Image 1: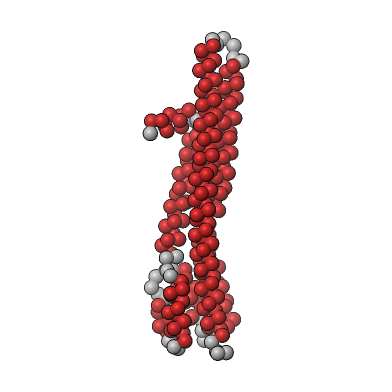
Image 2: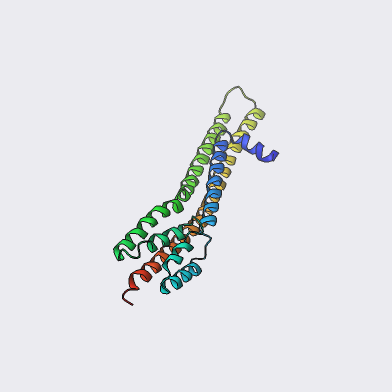
Length: 210
């Protein structure tokens, strides 16, 4: 910890700005992991299989009641379609589309910000690098200093530059890494939700023709 603190002090102030960006990014990561694992943990194939059985058996009320097991997006979309079963195909599709448009933004929000934070961390690290290099080169030509003082100031400036580069790139890598993971989880959850909605739509709208 002492070494990390020493590195942060040497890279100040931009190193501390990047630490704030890292804290914000990790808060987003924790929030997204919690939201997705909490709200999209239902086995969509198994649930849709049970809904199909209820609908084909004519027990639509039981199918609707099974959607009250929790405030999960999948259950909300399915319930939106089931409650319109007696109002025709257009009402079913419109109700499910409306519910999808309502729940999908909550799934997709904040994750794209991680990529922006990665770029921001890199640029802030670059600013710290340039500041350190300016200080290092300025010390070489500063009059009234002996060789040891110039060497010490040059070393401090280069250290500031390198630590800012390190922190900027490290935080950018962390943000990009979690962005890839969360983006994959988001796309998978969205695809399952839309696929389930399509399955229910086909089940409800094609049932009379069968």
